[in-house]
Length: 172
View (cartoon, rainbow, N blue to C red):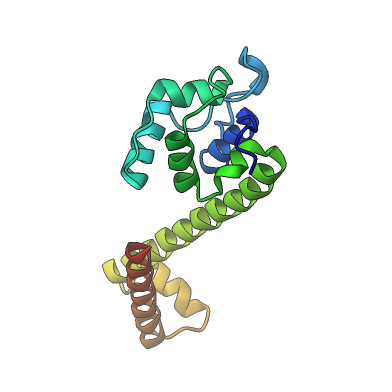
């Protein structure tokens, strides 16, 4: 990376919006800056960066970087952002690289969101089967050819998968 290359506000926005997609009701054209506000406040982002990296970046600095009013962040700020977003420092100077890495980051975020939703649904299934083993869900499953023993095994397998997923999440 060329140490004198300019910070890319667009690259920074790509990463912020990859992790925190803009709210759907917030059209870019409504903002005088002509870009959407991210799905996180700059205060929340500042706190999250500090919690995950140990670096402190002020709300004003983050807002300025996002809106293009601050285009000369310190190396400490760049290092913190690099660690937080999991990308090389050079990506904040190269919009093409940032777009590529932001696409990957979006895919990871979406995968994580889908995994969380699947875990939540599996947890609910387990709870329903435990709360009322002869309830509507159990009757429905029996109607699909599953006997009571199979339903109990299914409930146990769901519980084990949830426990394994929770252990994996805690290790990450």
